[in-house]
Image (cartoon, rainbow, N blue to C red; front, side, top):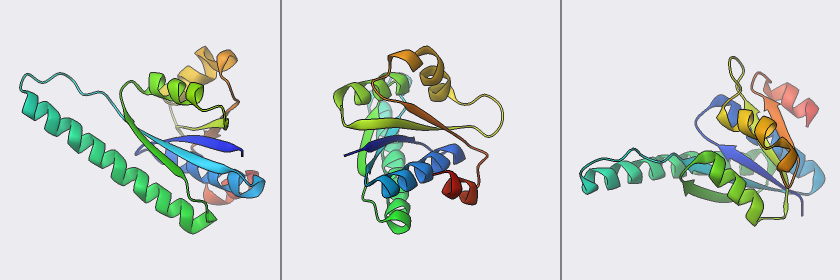
Length: 151
């Protein structure tokens, strides 16, 4: 089955990428895998404080992903696979791609203005020729109608 891997965070371009991937999956009989990344926390001297910070970040990411999954199921009827990982975003995305040969495309949203975002900048440039699947970069400036028309 064709699986679209979408990295979801709190940015508007992540919502655009998720909508695009869901519509493509629905039209091609595919699936969506949502990857929420929890950035590594800076070292805090007191372990209890660090553990609390990490737990709060993980809970925020899980809530975000559950909301995105609910929207996806309502709009397209697709039940996504959900993964939440903590660490370096580039390393985690690459590891996810390497571990799952069923991923047909990495779908990332580019910021509507300014720099496209660190994952887009890395995977569309540095890693572009070494990925095990195509990368789809969805412009963050697209509205719902444009996404529906293009997907």
